[in-house]
Figure (cartoon, rainbow, N blue to C red):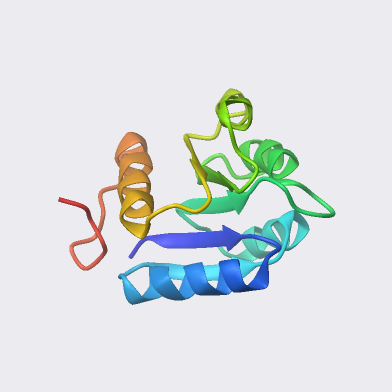
Length: 132
């Protein structure tokens, strides 16, 4: 089963997204900021980190730097409501494999998760939400 860590300071967004992922065959956990994400990852490996860019305490760009240094096996997808091409390019420059602007369709997210796992060489489990 694909393990996804959702990092977003907006409670409704992170809890809702984690539930939606869970109902679609992913093992999803949600935390409220970058510091909580790093604490969680210290004890629990994940396949994909789905993180907002704009958050208090530790924003998504700082988290991305930490993830690539400490947890290089985790694939990172950046999400933002304050997007635009600049945020997308900055995320890619820092090592994010993908960036999505909020709001996004869940089908698009599933396709992006599948893509980053394929790039890493980890196929989706047959019971998870692969996009055909």
